[in-house]
Length: 585
Image 1 (tube, rainbow, N blue to C red):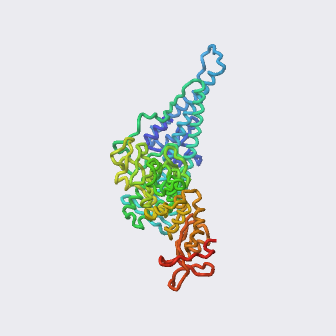
Image 2: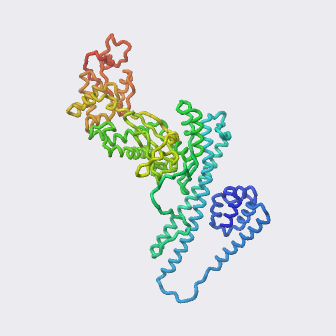
């Protein structure tokens, strides 16, 4: 195995290169081993019985015939030596063996099994690494074509787009389908290698447990164990990897999803809407070329929440969870305690994971499209990043109910994107360059509206000045007419869990003052809202409006029929007229 590795290293050939040379040389008459099998053979698994394969590899890797013959003889000599060791195992010296109940023989057997398993694990890990490299190469190429194709507006079944300082890409739909097929095949081989590695690790753990049970410490001659931490993680003082370069992938990574076409479409949409210039759009695409993992996560987040409605509900729900309006009467994030404000990011994390169905990450918060992703939240304009997140992917979320806006973006965390200063924990904030490096998934979208946040402070004070929850509910409907009122608003003013019940009672109580209380869950109320020219109501919202019988001065005003009489939205100067019974039945 080491001899073949040295030959491939000197020839500067990867396993896939060797496989291609063997295929084109025609030495195996259509019986060439699969690439995954070749990975295992070159890692030493079952190699001693593959003389023909070894000789073929030497011939295709070494163009010099004389040197190739010399290396072939050396390889055959090593094979004979391996066969001899298998045929003539060392015999124990004669003597009296003490009766130990078979524990010594069992210990020897377990130690041999441990050594064999560690050898298999080494081979499996090398196979998985090679397959991962091939998968990353294919995935990066397909990602580039998809993103550039989406930005370049394909025509007549072809995808093409210029690069700022590189070659143009052009590929037909058939060729692109072939590339996707190739990517799927390579990832299948990678997954197979990973399964072998996991099985080997499981057997290795069992063997080590047996050794421990016999009182013998386990060893790790492969050197694969993770090194023990030698101290706190620190940000590097100099750049350790090229800007825009993707961080190395883990050796054993979960199966990844193919990249949807939505990434390029999102960037294209930003260019069309003028949010970024054409030049900036090309820069964004080039950064996605260099970081296919980031491109895949970006595309998956767009697939899960294309319009941002789910994430907006997540942030609003996290705030309502901490405000607990039914018990506290609070409705603004500024009313949270210092500890509660600190926990707002954690609440968003939990709500986001449940809403989008994201699995736990191996080392970070989430697993998105097969990649570990962290999440950072802020109510301000910047985030704090610990040094151990360096090189990782992070979803950055910002939101503030005072402005009513929220945003979510994706960032590859790098030391060169951070400000130089740090806090006592070594956490650092993004520099101006770092903020420009964020790939915004949704930017400055409105949070769900709540009536209490839109009303003036004096109006809210007058509502909460009422003594009972029912009285406060009725005052809310009187003061916030033509304004959508949510269940959170009702919970805050009633400070009770049955705020909706209070709204139903207010519907009847306010009818005598000419106020119609509409609810989005009632089909008839929806028809009335449409007939009055009011905005459509969401199922969980309420709206109040004062009506008056249509008079000659109300020509052209939208009307609805109540008990055979036309009614319309009242003007401030119109007198209060009780509604007919049909309005609150």
